[in-house]
Every structure is written in structure tokens, then in C-alpha cells.
Length: 468
Image (tube, rainbow, N blue to C red; front, top):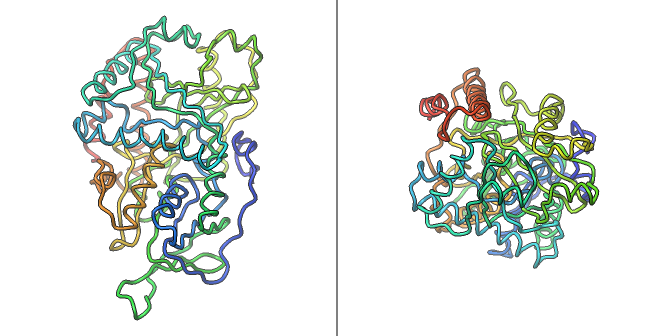
């Protein structure tokens, strides 16, 4: 299965699990979860914690962790929207604070659950250093710090250029912000560990199972509600309720083809560094690092002494096409290598051993979307905009409450049952998404050249208002 990726995905190389068989014949469950990534697995976990007797099936087209859950950078962080400043502007202090605190709680709970359940996903709760490499980015850092204060959030600290460079020796840093609520982990080991955990709790996992249709199924005479029949090539599954947890792949459905756009993002990974090389850059902690570009650079250490380096650019394919041939992009890879060497010139001779990518689900307003369709029988959570490790845990609790019919503080969050703006029909969908991408990249270039303020690109704001 790894050979289907455009290049070896380090996480899936270093985490092994035997896949489960596909659906065969006709099966019946209370809840059918489509998608074997973090959202689907956390939903199963939270459901079975709340109602141990539920019959839950997780149906995955490929293998557990095949999508973003097995390919991401491994940052469990709080980011929603483009940053705290934008979140505050879009939702106000009370609603923005509630959303941030819910995801921050998930960062802590992921650590607590994995420790309690014996899931060795190499989690290190070292915080996040958000660095600025130019004046425009530094203004964004200051705006986020001010927003955190307005929202009454703890755990944020301003860092001078000297303080940031003392922590990690890069000549590019002109200032930074430290946020305590962030952990780094091995995402494939987390996905595989969660799969084993929910199986022990009673869930049934099917892999290699494509969902070809979902239709109403007649319910027994003793019940008033109809059921949902999930058809697959090898059989069918009838359930009371469905959870759609396919993130970027949801763009291939009629419901979400104009609500979410698959954006391909990429990472590279170095060979293990020597002690002398580590001494040259410091970085004694396991904090995650990212800058304040629109297309951020994000990087972190691994336990075997490598550096993962990601971001820089993204690629949107016409009609949201997702295919294995897109999992590698040599142009983006070259850009990543160049930005790495600018950040760490003392590592100019380092060798890169891995390069891979995959699609993330992008929404117009840069926040996730959770809601319900089919008269209350289908619930969905998707569109994490590349930052889904911690929000997918929050999402699992939201989807649990939706399935169980519970009204809670989580189901009242600003990205639940909200008005979801849509991209226009093709070809305007691709054109508008590509315009947005280019606008963001142009602003990044202007920042590097010393031009522009920390506000979002005015052209991008006009496009978003027009679309939304």
C-alpha cells in the first residue's frame, strides 16, 4: 500500500498494522462511520465511552490512516481560522474563546487518553513557537497576542528575536509567540493505536471497502424511523445513523463538492542529525514551530533525530481531483528544501530522505464544518484546513453528541450547524480557489520583500465576501 504514495511516507513506514477485511454480505449496526482517520476513530471512541453497548462500524476505503491522519506533520495544536486575530474578528470574543478552549482541551485529553490506554504515539507536549521572519509576520504575531488577551486566554508568551534565536538558532527570526497548548506526535501510530483501542471497546473495522451508495432502508415494523443502507462492492451495512468523516474526500460527494476543496500540501524529512548538527541549532525542547506566512512553514523534531519540514505552497487540482500521482511534487519539494536551508544555513549539507504529500480539506472561511443531513440520520465533520489533529478529537465529541441527540456546549460551538458558504460551480470553483491560493502566496512574497501589513490580502477578502 505504501507504494501507492508518490514517495515513502515516513509515518506509515514506521508504524505497522495488519488491515482488517472488507465488508462481506449484509451487516447491521447502530452507527456506521465512513472514514478511518482521526475524526472517525475519535467518534467511535467517544461513542463507545458514552454508550458501551452501541454497535459501531468504521468503514475505510483504503487502510486506517491512509488520508491526512497518516500523513500530517503530527502537530496537535489549537489553530482555527487563519489565526486568533481572524477568529476573534469573525466570531467575537465569547464564541472565539469557547472554540479555542474546546480544542485546547483536546490537546490535553489526547495526551491523557493515549497515556491511559497505552498508545505509544511518541507524544511530546512541548508547546508551539510561532515565529516571525519579517515585519508583516511580526505584526500578525502581535495581533494574535492581542487577540489572546482580549479573549482571556492563558498560556501565550511574547518572545523577542534574541529569545527566539536562543531557543532555536535561526538567523531568520525577528520575534515569536509561544503557546503552551501544543503537542507533537507520530500520527500513524496514533491512528493505528486508536483503531486497536476502539476494536477492544467493541467497534468493528472494515478496510478496503468503498462506499458506492447510501439509500433509505425500511425499518422493522416495531420502529417508526427509517434506516440507512450503505452499499459496498462486497455487501451492505444497514445502520440507524451515519457519520461522514472523510475530510478532503468529502469533496467527491454531492453534498460537499462546493463546500470543501482538496488542497495538496507537502513535507520533506531530513536524515537523522548528528549531535554536532543538533548543537548548531539548539532546539533542546520538542516544541513545534511554524511561521506566520499564509502558506506556513511548519517543522518539528522526531524521536529518532530527524526534522520534518512542511508547507511553503499548496496545489489545487481542477475539479478537486485526488489521485496517488499527486502525492509527490518535485517543484514544491525543491521550494521546501530551499526554505529549510535559508532557515538553517548551518545545515546546508543535510540530506533529505523522505518527501510526501496529500490532500487537506479547505473551506472558504478557513474553519471546520460540522452538521447534520438526511433528516437527522447523517452527521458530518470535515474541513480542518490542514490543522485537524486536535480539532478532530473535539469533532469526535461533537459527533458523539449529535448521534446521541445531546445538546451540549460542544454542539453550540461556532463551527457547528453554522451557515456554510459554498464555492461556485466549476470551472468557477477551481478559478476562485486558485485565485485565493495565489492571493495568499502574493502576500507572502510581499512580506518577504518588506511590503504590506499583517491584515489579510484585500483582494482575498473581497473574493471571500463575494463567495460567502
